[in-house]
Amino acid sequence: MYDILVYGPLFCDLVFTGLPEMPSLGVELFASDLTIAIGGSAIVAVGLRRLEARVGLIAELGNDPLSAVARQLLDAEGLERALLREHPHPLPQITVALSFPQDRAFVTRFQRPETPPDLAALLREHPAKHLHICSFLAAFDLPDAARAAHEAGLTVSLDPGWDKTALRDRRLRDMIAEVDIFMPSESELRFIAQEDDVAEAARRLMPARAGALVIVKQGADGATLYRKDTPPLHVPAIPVTPVDTTGAGDSFDAGFLDAFVRGDSLALCMQIGSICGGLATTAPGGTTALPSRTEVETWLSKLRS
Image (cartoon, rainbow, N blue to C red; front, side, top):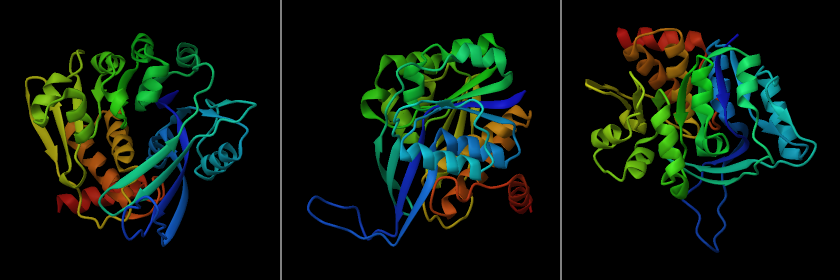
């Protein structure tokens, strides 16, 4: 039995750091470093794995060179590939990240497989406690994912990712209404709700299920949890010097969800999410600095003292 199933596209990430500025047309810039890392849904899965959760990754790989690199990176992390679908044709999925200490920009190439996975069958064959849906891409491929997971007895979370067209798509709003935990960044939340006030935007996008949560990730300002009829719960960012913010939100998701399925209090879930998200920024690449359970416990002790 798995603790958490993570569903969504994975990418081979090329992360450029040490850039003097953002590039402009006709100008060549030189980065001081390049990191090749596993990205997308795999960041959450690797984060959970390092926290000693039993995690299954539902994603796709092809027979192209980028997929081969992704396999090597997954194996290096000790992340099992039992739930991955292997396709006998190219399935290039790559993200180029131009990363700065406080923010980053992405260029992504994503190719969908011809058919989505049979999620209902996977849930029958591989029992779990929770399903985490990574990105609008997964949400659009399987719009009934939350319903199928609830029927199988799982709780469900969703992190939408950024795309202007997708964030205004009615299908995404419909899925948000069905999950137990909605986990956007502040910019994603405000853009979807078309509302600048974060608390009001969270109220508008609160899922319909009893006890549902909206968790807004706010970068250097920490994160805030909203729940119907209760005061907001805010947690500050931990004091670190960021190097690369790629994957920080996914690392927060991993920390929060690991604590959530273990039955920890929401305050502790938020604190662990903040620790994981902060530590993830201290090295290039979305998975390089993801913490172990021991590192999280050390930080918890430090913050309490």
